[in-house]
Length: 61
Image (cartoon, rainbow, N blue to C red; front, side):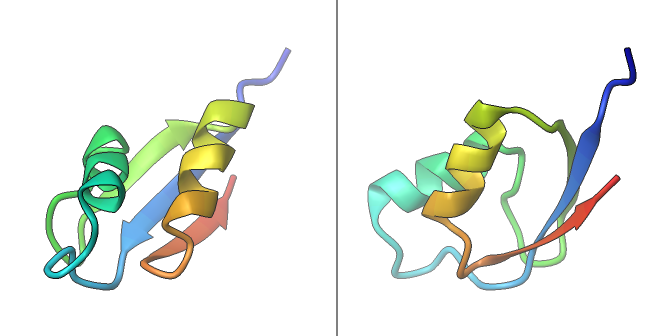
């Protein structure tokens, strides 16, 4: 079985965001604008991305 991944890039600042949004970004490994992380493509990761979709860019694969 192939392990699918998602590449996530933080494109908007965390300044002025709610504590939950900041915690979600940090749980994905994103702390500064321009940071890129690779995460497994699963329901948990998709849910986190949905919470901060306005602050990130997603590339599948």
